[in-house]
Length: 389
Ligand SMILES: Nc1nc2c(c(=O)[nH]1)N[C@H]1C(S)=C(S)[C@@H](COP(=O)(O)O)O[C@H]1N2
Ligand SMILES: [Mo]
Image 1 (cartoon, rainbow, N blue to C red):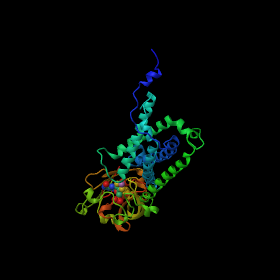
Image 2: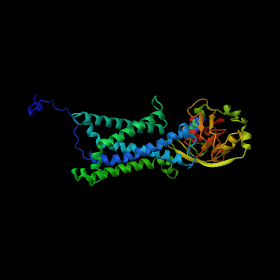
Image 3: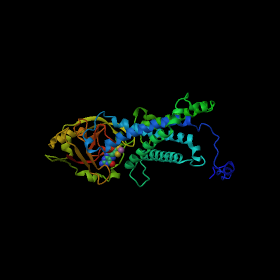
Image 4: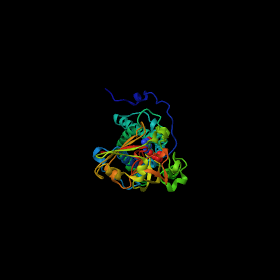
């Protein structure tokens, strides 16, 4: 038994011809600074994504506790979700650029520990790329995959989060060593690179700024003039409001709504015609439609308070939840459950008019739900039945 001698080591086959990287800045300081920003963007994405998930699909015990205030809450959290997700695309590209030479290290693994570390990075990169890409295609309303977007995007968010935590744990010494310009590790890097690195980071910041400025107007209306790249513009659509799913796409026709009646189930069920609904006390509210796809737009709504309709059916506002069913024959948003906080809120309307005009068919004629602090997917159009639960 002899340990390898220098002569034996010389017999090892030469490494394959791998690319050589002479470019600088592919170093731990760049990776740390960009990684910090990327980590912050992913943290905001995760938190706002959780808000969105639990507002849309609350577990039973939470359904009646969800708050109807602030009215613009979901417009803010979902606007942030999409804005930070778009910023993360830029940051992820720069981060991958900073570290890509490590993809070609040779030998590919020096120990079990090293192999595991590389595997964890592979998982992080794959899941992070998957997450921002599916998010991007979703805001463009393009679903070129066979799996359900919501469930998959939600599940992979946990994979990203877990692999970021693992990555931070594994890289803790390097992160600490390059955290600030004066950290121990940074002194090992060529001082003359600091100027180039600052330019790279400024350029990255500018790119994030441009992406944000040209898209955030889709939810933050003061900047809507700059909304050049977002798929939606808050003003484009009939009655000054975007339309997500048209009546034609939902199979709702003028003929289908001609003999429309509102059916209300409860202890004292009743049926109302559109004229009868118009004859009930009307209320107005200025509320946003805040779509999960990141656009939002405020509008003036008027119609009958949902709590009045619930009371009339013998329901107890503040205690009873509501199930709302659309005329639409099929579709993920045909049936919607509304917790008691929303159902009793004076701003929650069965709206008949939008911006002073009767609803158009695309916006949900004859009647639709509009409620404060709710994801757009739950603002059910073409309402046909209410059931007090
Ligand atoms: N019945 C029904 N209601 C629906 C939808 C739908 O597909 N079917 N789409 C929802 C979505 S995703 C949004 S963002 C809002 C948009 O309302 P608008 O088209 O009037 O702007 O309607 C919601 N109401
Ligand atoms: Mo939506």
